[in-house]
Amino acid sequence: MSPSLPLPADEDLPEEIRAALANLPPLNVFRAVAGVPASFRPFLELGGSLLGGPEIDARNREIAILTVARETGATYERAQHEQLAATAGVSAAEIAAIRDGDASALDADGALAHRAATEISRDVRISDEALAALVERWGNAGAAELILCAAYYNMVSRFLESTGVELESEELLGEQSPEDIRRRAE
Image (cartoon, rainbow, N blue to C red):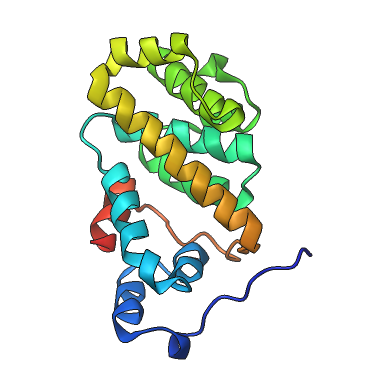
């Protein structure tokens, strides 16, 4: 097992952080970020805004997030977002294809989200061609939203992997949708 930072105990957290954690699914990612109290609420707010963004539907957003998880090798992020992707309409076959790096099982929008997230994760900067395709499909606002989403989840992946946050022993999200998580984080 790799070294990891310990998750903060309740008694080590300010009351307002403990109250926020009590309203969220008991995921280690939330507790790990709570260890940085000044960043906890902004982290939740930005993540929530992206999970409920108005420009990109939940299905394509989850395809992008799963692609980031694959490209960054973030096991924790992949496991949690596979659950959310399933509730957002991504099929088991599509989830498996994304895990394998194969976009051929995806429809045109999913393949575009996959391409953009792959390029952002792998190359840092999206290609001019992929950016033009995003703008053509979702407009400037949608392109910006998908890029910010991929960038945010790259940050999350790197945080999770660098701190060694362990995956919970059971699936805790059940049938919760990305929208459910966003509402609970408010």
